[in-house]
Length: 240
Image (cartoon, rainbow, N blue to C red; front, side, top):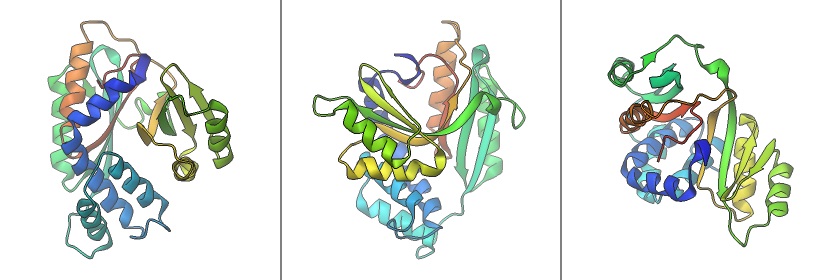
């Protein structure tokens, strides 16, 4: 199945990390709410809330995260960080973070790479191999017609739609990602995953010996509350 793996595998991975995702999505909601607490007028907040609801985050958690962002409740101030580097076998990594302690997060990310056969590089060392895109993954069912989903996505501003045996993957410019997300949600579609991601233009294929190290590094990073998203250019799926 390549980089995206199977639908069942991705659902299982999400279920196994649901508690950690609650914390990460709450941070994302808090940061988005700094631009306004009404999702009707804040597209970034609307998308963050919908993603949280998709993993069954309780409404109380969502409301509390919004109030922390708007200042109605006291909360931490989060800073965005991004790290670039290489994992085992030369696989490129970009690690997105939201943290209230940059020294702690920087130390953790660097030590994690060191312990698992990788190394952190300078800004720009791998990002040239990626493009920033909105990515929305929808599971194929008998009820979904390819022409209908293509029309809805393209009318909303999507750039491309890729169909495989299990899913439709919609790609957008990051600027119109919230519009496409809303249009497809309003049309009744649900997402297995949706986010603005670094999509690789150059793939890397590791050896069989390197794959366990790469998966371990990803597990360690994703288990940390400060890490929002891990991107790689690996040609096989490492996230199941």
